[in-house]
Length: 276
Image 1 (cartoon, rainbow, N blue to C red):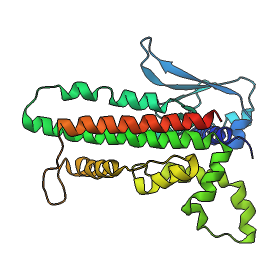
Image 2 (image 1 turned 180 degrees about the horizontal axis):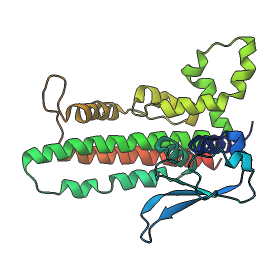
Image 3 (image 1 turned 180 degrees about the vertical axis):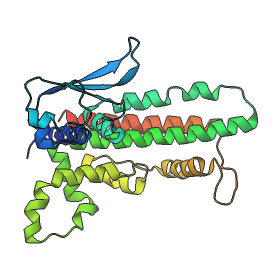
Image 4 (image 1 turned 30 degrees about the vertical axis):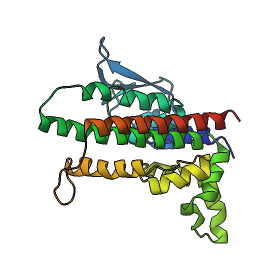
């Protein structure tokens, strides 16, 4: 089995090539047969106008004649967003980036300063509601990025996920399907990880324990914070009965401290795994 990380990057590159081929109106095979470079068209101050696909002069004329929007027989102009895929970019960051704790701390670094702002009571409530959502979302991103980065960079951890996660344990295959499933197993894992909601602690807690060997311990406070985040995100700080949720400067400060402690503990644990 080839490197899991290399496989993920191959998949990302394949999707980008497929997107470019579709934009040009040719097949993947035809794209592979021609030479080209993609340049960023931008102003002197860095404002991106788009991308320019510049083709070599000695490319196959039969393929070049099929290309949509070909100008002067040598290039195609694309809009700034034609080659972008936010989910793909996020996945690439999670696979490659190993500084999840630094990113998490950066997300929370401005919270103490925001809490010092002197505002009207009603405005303060709205601000606290937004901070509750922000803090829990930052922790969710940390949990997701940390797990995905470590699993996708380790064939051993990928196998642990396959062997311990109930999602895979309950799947049934015929003899004829076994080889096909084995060949596509990394794709199956990729789709699975991408779809996990990492604030669902009932699922995330055992997954971290079984695959990374990390025990969250008693995190009743986090379950409560996630429930509160739901009311803040979906009902602007009110519960289903229309009651204003309980959120204060003190509770936000406490949540920041608890989330930092948890993130630092997880980071120390995975760093230890990576040095073994």
